[in-house]
Length: 483
Image 1 (cartoon, rainbow, N blue to C red):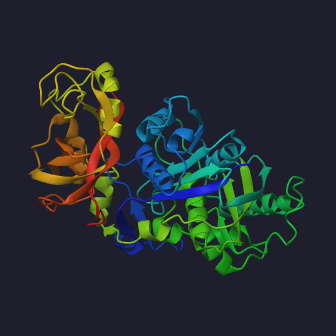
Image 2 (image 1 turned 90 degrees about the horizontal axis):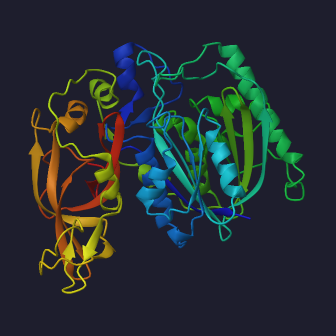
């Protein structure tokens, strides 16, 4: 049976404090939240999922080619009627035979994805990524963003001891109307608290009665060392477990909403990542998921694994409230005139390995590298069939300049409106004694702050939309990307 072999997390680098929001509105509708993460214009559920998955894969000795199943959970997919898991598989360079399973609709999606990954035949990659939105005057106050990825394999160090669910019709606590991108709710506080508490209690108590886990659950189910519980705000974990008497210090180990905000379907997975990072080898960790309209799921784990949560959390960059509104696309509009660099979908499809994986070509005659791997060898000028080579994902800046307001091509006008001026650079990538230089867009850095000879790394980000379809590819960020 699969166990957790590695965990990775991804958080946007931008942060806004609760005080900053309260200064504007005179209040803050996010109990106990001190600050929250702010996704930028080129970050969405897919890019956060890619970053978290890359982190998990880098922490494991498992060959990515051995991953048989990818389970993705999100309530905020880039497109409502298009599967995004294949993009995740492609961006990570996983086999095209990888089985994909996507879970949406409610914050229970994270539990459903984990259940599916544990039940999979062979190694599985489970990723929960979310960035909910709401009315900026009220519902949006607690919303943050983030992603957590779990690599599951027989060799994993964290065993899942049991999983049980309580299913009920609990409509209206949190929902998104068809055609809208903003979450809302019925604002019936007493109904919400009772529904969540009763569902959580039933799911957790069910663990002790789980016939598949009864021989292992030989202690009081509430006598655990850490707990990650449904957390739309910082008060909810203790309120949701009010009938279970779980100590506050136990809940604190898996509570992250106070520092990153409500991350939707990724909230409990991120809390679980933090709790497993702080655990001892024989500690038990409880994870409890809740979903509007569905009920609750409880899981019990034993063991520990590094996730790097604290390192990912440290060093964020603060933004003002007007900057926050622009980054999230709440204010301003852009009317783009002109065509820009139109790239047809067939041509884009043919170049995906270059855009995601930095796939270059090695000349079999002279060993020189060519990027993109098309046409003749750049060194000997022979027209040959290139040998595929994936370039390293770190390189050195050899030239850089800033694109100021009004200077962006039409396809990047929306990015510039929300994110301001940005840098482009020539980056040198070396592979086995050979090198190539490629033009790239820089991200995760203020314009003009990246200098010659700086080291940068490839990150998958949203590039632009064409004909209503988002397009993704590699940008480069400073290796010290918290500037």
